[in-house]
Image (tube, rainbow, N blue to C red; front, side, top):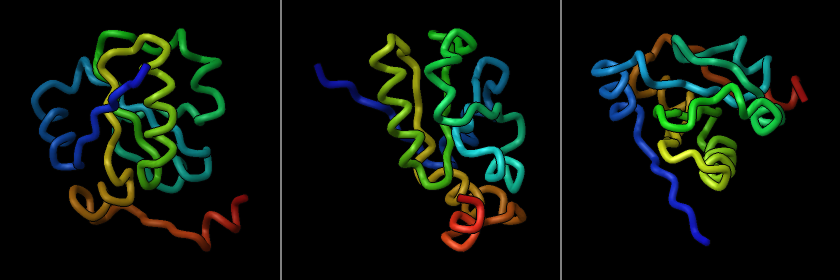
Length: 119
């Protein structure tokens, strides 16, 4: 069975949040050091390794926008959630890195140097 995951650009996600942020969950699946370095306001931190273990904390019907650094980890966990019956999962295309470029240019950006230092 094939599952499709919706991907939205930061500007599309920002528009969604501006319209109706109360029912939308921003789920940040990065590591703690990444989340501590920079995050989208109102996002909830749940490292990717814990998402399936903590699945009962997630609402199946309300939109869940999954966030990581560049959009690859969030894509992976988004597909897993769809397989588990979640039907309103959205991947933030480009992750916090693209969000920093398109929405919040004051947000701290990080790259391979920081990733290697914290691995």
